[in-house]
Image (cartoon, rainbow, N blue to C red; front, side, top):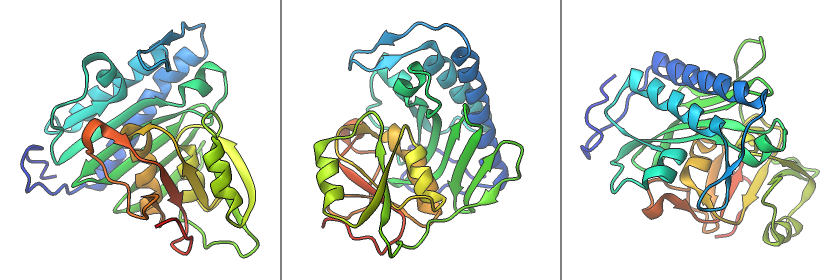
Length: 272
């Protein structure tokens, strides 16, 4: 794989299947580290932004960074816990990794199984590889130019894809911990048959495997929260767009996302 130098503006990442498999394996290793903590008594601390954090977050990020560096050390790794400790990089480059070692920490500390490991590779502002691993339910989703795939338990991995907009109404997924009146108003204006609450990047994955159709999120999120799920959904045939209808990009100043809507079918109308 011609990884090159992440600071060169002419870099184009070419992923092999072995590269993809390696990153999936790294996510599984991080999930194992998380579950070792999950099954024990653990201490909950509060970060500067008032969000919870445990030793599972830091252990998983250490595993992920080491695993990525087994593959390549050419690109900056922007990890949630590293950023919390040392701040954002001044310039991540055109190609960089986004890592959320434990997405859904609120679910984790409340002993709900809806938490994930998120690893994404960004090139030219778009996610070109993403892995979402939910260790407590033994489910893994990944997307790259080879397609979108899921594996659960001991079953073989299988391709996944979004579905067409159902004629009898859409299924929406909403954040279990961050649902807002703005989200409710957005859904009320659309043909929604049911709304399902869940945590972490599993919301993107429900769209990617054709079990739901739309996920609006109005409120603060960071790029590492969305990039891996965006990749899975993108390569399953869906997309993540801002309220202006433009695809969500990565490497923005401050690595903070605007409000966004994840959609399965391209038939679904969004603002803009």
